[in-house]
Image (cartoon, rainbow, N blue to C red):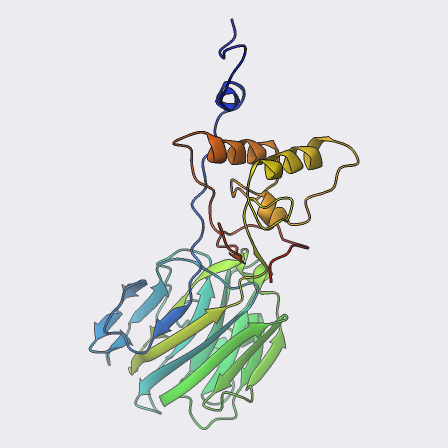
Length: 336
């Protein structure tokens, strides 16, 4: 016996053939705007970190501590980002051990040993910018305070300059005090600026996706003290990202609307030899599961015609970037 009437008048026939595919919750994309830290919304504090007035204090002036602050949600960074933050390390010289700016894909609360390891030594899927105030010979540090980029693709990161150091800058007499740092990633180039935000101190080619194992990461800071102490504060933080090509999800035929012809176009592209292909796989990935296949057409038909069905995930209605963590792309469409 058929589960549907022989002459259906509504597209509920779809429910007799396919199950409705639910939308996957996406990784959140957001720009950061913290002129101060009176409001800590969107941030997670770990270890010794506290909200200290209008700043984040990673460590107080006590020995043997490690503290971190991370974005609560992962943020897409593999397509590019630009961030500027103001930090203060006190005293400006003579303390230990330093702090790092970090992008990591291990966990939202990852933190490792204090002291010379700077809270990240041993962490997988991460890239850090060291603001290292103390010379640790056992980590092959240069002879003086320095900046450094550390990462090991496919392996745990290390504070050892020989094991994981990608670039180092030791041109400053000290890296403590009240300073402003900028870190940018664009076109495969990872650059670090200190105080002069136009001329980089370090500029290296780096596969961020390969180092993180994902196109998104938890982003933040770690401060560390060992047998000598210092305070590590972050006073402000701004970050913008380049999240990639814009598109309208569901606009498979690229006519700037989402309707029945898009489902027909999708089915033809998938199953009818010689049909026009879907040129924007992001648009065609209607259920946002990272692939283009039959369930996408079913999802679209259900969203259009079956009351109570799951809505089409963002971006909907207007051109925007993909908020989801996937590997498919959009080669060509009408969006800017």
